[in-house]
Image 1: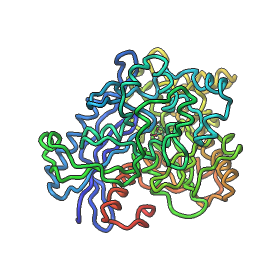
Image 2: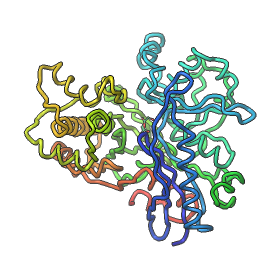
Image 3: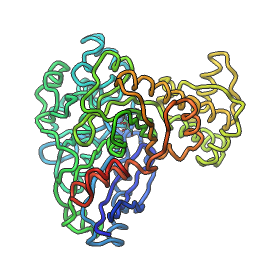
Image 4: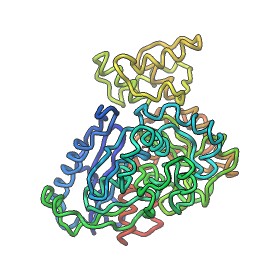
Length: 465
Ligand code: LFR
């Protein structure tokens, strides 16, 4: 083993610290894994940063005990769009609100009415999803403009965690590209757009963007003292948007389509430039940035979120103890269920609650269409997985049309690849090979970009893991 890099990788359901042991390749070893559960705080659903930070520190400590001076660097990747605000003196003046908080409800429609339907898309190449940073900022500006005026930095979650670890604030470019206020080329914030939206003059947009694979600083004395890590350990940017870290592993070449499959399913490709045609807009693509500055046009598909929340219904409301492999097996047995859920229907966006159980929503969705779906876990999961497979196949056809490239292969990156039934259902609907890539793709992409930045692996290796 030549060295170790630590990949901190947070998803909407759980977070982990993974040690990437670098030799000829990268071998990931789990240092800590912890739940991620947002909580109501100060009037909003917010990420529980204290508990996430505790899980991260635990992972650092385990790593320091196991690897000592072999550890060279740390980097952070998480979901996109959410942010915390800090002032000039380094005080946290706004804790991150979860993108499933309803504060932006109705805002995209309001902005589209005021400025035209394509206004944000034309400048940023980003589809108007209600939770995008731009709408969160508009909501905050309407509710508490003084907080935004006081802010010096808007730190996306990975930027925030890097700042907590090394004291250096930055805005990493793949995550900035998800906000709906940055240019699709990676050149920075779109000041004209920002002005027009009434967000002009804020210090948070004075800052340049930082590329993936840059050194921000060293582990602070305080973090070193708590964890036993050396202050020689560097804090780097990776592709801090988790989807971009996963997508870095997409095989090179024309027609290579990825699905980054976790809570969300993000389906897209890496292309030299953004896809900005009307057709791309109609296909609901968002042109985010790839780690190396190329484009990452993709579509947000609701993803395993639907299954995760159905599982909560069964386990929390009906006292079942179903794990994912069991759910997949039940769905496999329910092969007489020939129904296809529209997983992207907005009724499935909000999380499960005991007042509005998620699995019941699925059954009701069919009942509203005069179709009977039995409410057992196998039947419900089958309809959800068929819905996902159809969403993938339809999106594949749209991506082929918009990009003008025939798909050569679809690579499912991330935990969704473990769901063999979903892979088979998808394969049955796609006329190119569907294969699975790394199950821990977001962590692996994070570690690979660090290893490349430190000259420990070759660039071409990244897309071949
Ligand atoms: C996946 C992801 C998606 C983004 C969504 C919200 O984890 O990062 O790419 O659209 O979460 O941030």
